[in-house]
Length: 207
Image 1 (cartoon, one colour):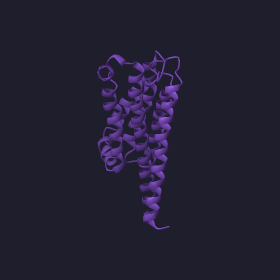
Image 2 (cartoon, helix red, strand yellow):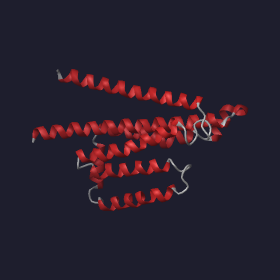
Image 3 (tube, rainbow, N blue to C red):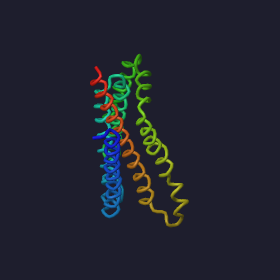
Image 4 (spheres, rainbow, N blue to C red):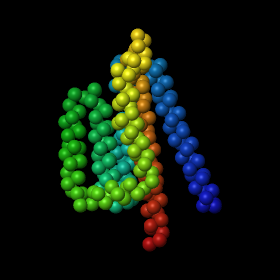
């Protein structure tokens, strides 16, 4: 198969798959909108929350695997992996009172890894930044940890809805945008992994 045609085909397949992911997100939102839980719509045990937790766990695994294909970026991908595993545990803060004690060993591990890789960490970050797909990580970060936090402010939704203000409306906005952000992180992780695997194969074939 022609290389250009193969590239276009693989790109198209990924677009279809990621579009399917977006459709799935909307189905999850619809399910939560029509199936209130014991904590209400889009509460702590909703499908949206479960999807967030699943994606965070997957992200931890994806970046753990990515480092195995490229030793140069292994230090930073391991740190990113631990970060997502910490975020995964943090999502259970409303169900588990002692969640901090569960995440504490990972915090210690994170700090230890920074010390352990102190000589190669900067170069590892630079190597990761050389991968174009890393830009997707920035998008995921901005949506998840910046935009969603401001978009979910009670003050904003009280101003928008005024006397019609409903906490569930705020919840769906905040949790929905957060799930979208996590999904963008997942797409970024997959794209980086694919890029690293492709680069690894090229290097192997030239050796």
